[in-house]
Length: 175
Ligand code: FES
Image (tube, rainbow, N blue to C red; front, side, top):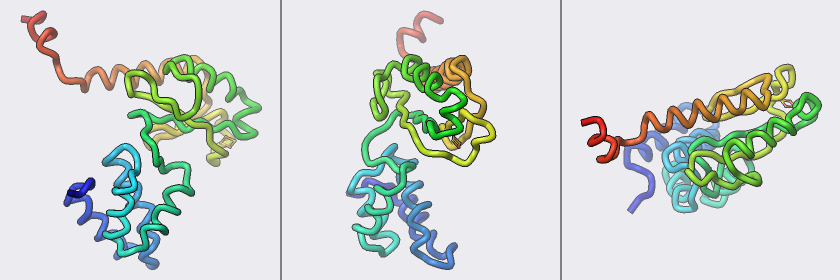
């Protein structure tokens, strides 16, 4: 049985037609697969390779080369924290230290107990002007401070709680 849903396989099969070089479809295809599963399993990469008619080794090579692709599970919200020169000079160490404590992890790659968060440190993301900065959930956040990190984590927790299914106990307590 496939790990990727049939509609996604069809979407991936249609990608090469959009690029002058059909191989260019591998990045958006892996992005779709990761979005669906949270991280890229070897089964998922094999299915992407089959859908694009590419060698599975090539697809795995691309997936393991780019830091935006994850071969291991990550939190639902994964922070890419830039710690390169400009961000470092403008306080990224303090920002990362606060992030670790706000989400309750000790090191990059560790997933918070509630499964919501993880982080990694990455190289320059080309926004040095707004250092220190990070990427999370396809968005970029600039001029970070430890306080701003607290706010972001609280906002994401609140969003997640709002999406959580209502439990029987909660229903009863509200009549
Ligand atoms: S050093 Fe962080 S965005 Fe360039």
